[in-house]
Amino acid sequence: MAMFKNLSERLSVTLKKITGKASISEGNIQETLREVRMALLEADVALPVVKSFLSQVKERALGHEVKNSLNPGQQFLKIVQAELTAVMGEENQRLELSVQPPAVILMAGMQGSGKTTSSAKLARYLKEQQRKKVMMVSVDINRAAAIKQLEILASEVGVDFFPTNVSDKPFKTIGLAMAAAKRELIDVLIIDTAGRLHVNDEMMLELKSIYDLAKPHETLFVIDSMVGQDALNIAKSFSEQIGLTGIILTKLDSDTRGGAALSVREITGKPIKFIGVGEKTDSLEPFHPERLVSRILGMGDMLSLIEDIERRVDKEKAQKLARKVARGSGFDLDDLREQIQQMQNMGGLGGLIDKIPGMRKVNQIAADPNVSSQFNRMEVIIDSMTKEERRKPEILNGSRKRRITAGSGTTIQDLNRLIKQHKQMGKMMKKMKGKGMQNMIRGLTDASASKNPFSSQLTRKF
Image 1: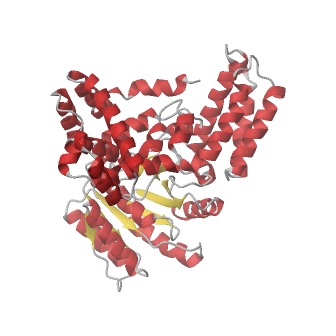
Image 2: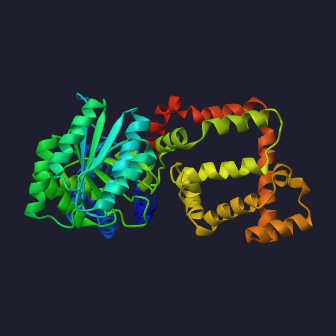
Image 3: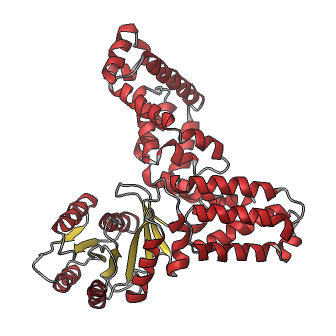
């Protein structure tokens, strides 16, 4: 994850020094704790959070669980993992929607935090992952563009939208929307409130009135993870006024320091329930603290990788490819393009490798912009070919190659590299001819049946 790249690298180097220690004492962990402190502060983690975390680590490191351990250095790392997970909330906190429908979710947040987009992402998640019938309504009467944006997003994700009359007070709109939701047997009503530029008494009074009328079962505060500590204090203020039930952290795919993500639960006292990891409406994920910590510490995240495969791999295309290879029909350039697109849907090569334990060094290579651009270049080259050329790349002669590279703005070397890579993949596919390929695809697309074994693999690194 780009956000935690620097922190992850710093912690990896620092903690590696103590891994092989035969004994742990206050003397030999002092330097390690100091370096961990600096790494966290440079990542913009709130000072009170850093102090509390290091105090807990030190207390446990000098206690019986480490002294009596066969491998004190490894046990110290395990303590760091456990305490960092505790800072972020121990485990995933699910939405509490087991109520008489419609369950009401109130969305609050600062202007520009991604609140309206997050509302649509949440609606899509509830519709696709929990099979809920969802309706959205906006009470941001000061911004007609925000209402229109929510209407467009509702259509895009395929959920109901209750139209807002900007001349009506928010309280009237909420009453009408709730009545419509009951009438249309809606499971979840998501209310998108106005984004705020700052906290003031008038704004909080209006929001509290909306809260009292809607009586939401969940009140989620949306925080842009790039804005830093100020947003956390604002969220804390919101929580004290209206009683938040959880946080949605947006833009965790951005290249920022990540301190807000590590501080928000401790500062607000409220759990992070979802994280936004991209701009698309399918890029909202339930937050699992132990998985994120595992990735920060360079241990990978196989459970999230499996869930990505389940959610984003086109199972029908995967099975079609498996049957094609099993018949010995070959692996053509159309197949290669589909595989590239499937990988891009899962966050690209870097996004995949980031979740695989022990692949930190490989991921540094995968994160290279040149590597990402190579995949884009491969797609452009394939798109510049005729259907026959994609199906039979062996017919590519000099004149065809010149036409393709001129049309795609690439070079003959780029095209030759693509052909070489395709041949290598084709050879691999031939070796898997028969049931081997089908079994591999089945293993990926039905990965949910084997989730539990990976949970122990994540901690086995310690």
